[in-house]
Image (cartoon, rainbow, N blue to C red; front, side, top):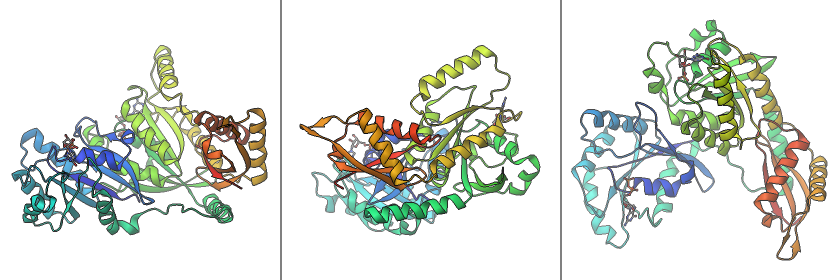
Length: 452
Ligand code: GDP
Ligand code: GDP
């Protein structure tokens, strides 16, 4: 499970500055759903080979009233989903009543909290941050988020308590170890049930689809309340293949639309994507493709997971509308050339059965053994068809290729100057491998190694 670090503090202390430094800003997923506060941001970060989720909880002051109080409530819910809380204060502004109010809240929770005095650049950090000790939350760490000062130490400290939660990351291995690793990984992947995560915005039809897949009688059994963060895991067998359905929506009684929003959690969604082998992204035909769909898609692409897209609520639409939706899909999703798109009605069941063919195809593509000599042959064919361009007058020479991992397939190419191949040539190679190996439903990663 990816651990979650929440950034908390009153407005203007530097939370988004730190957020941007920790994550790739491009990846930020803004929780812009009806009923949810707009300024909450989610992003993925990596430090020292450790991956985690960062949540910028937006500005809370701790003494909100009315609507603001509800928004603050949601920020507090985000804190509830976090493993570690980084509580930021402004060393230049000094201690404010709002800092006190927030710390009163935090003290009530059973969370690991790090108090961080930001903006210590150009001031006497020690004396300016001393007053924050009166918050009673322990050591006050000093940083300058805008300049990166103190951020590495903060990460070392705040990630240390999370050590057991980090998913295994691939460490640099020798060529031979890499091949053995890939082999062992493949063996494991081919024998385990396929973990399939059903994700999408609130109200796209995730729980309707889950119900449809399971058949109504199974649902009751699994209708158990989870914590906000945990998805429900449901084992099932389909065409003699075992699956574990990761249900992020939670099976709920279909009464209130607001329940969809209440049960929706981006942390839960991101965890499910990370845990899955194949992600089924559900989009609502009636809303078209929204920025939220694209953000979720961005996370799936980043995670390297296999992907199947279901455009739901395809029932009762007339041909003109359907054509328009298909044009929009081409326009906005044209860049994902590897994922199958299905048009379904979770409500009536049409198209739902075929989803599993694509899920199965994606998983077998992602876990099919690719042998060294075939990879090397394909690489040579690609090289013959389209010579890599010269780099500083020298020809790039790709020598051989082998598999470096699966789900997603990783192809490692050894050669001279391969580090300098252009993005365009890398894309050409990627497409060439994809076509030759007939890989569908999963991204492919290509890594380059200098020398032989
Ligand atoms: P947020 O509202 O908590 O997300 O705060 P922002 O990240 O938007 O930062 C508020 C202001 O503080 C911006 O003008 C930032 O440029 C500034 N700021 C953030 N970090 C630092 C820092 O380390 N040093 C200084 N001097 N200013 C900073
Ligand atoms: P979730 O929040 O993604 O789990 O969405 P739900 O499964 O709760 O569905 C939200 C609403 O969309 C409900 O009112 C469903 O009845 C409706 N819905 C779900 N699937 C379909 C579908 O295929 N067609 C139509 N017309 N409505 C659907």
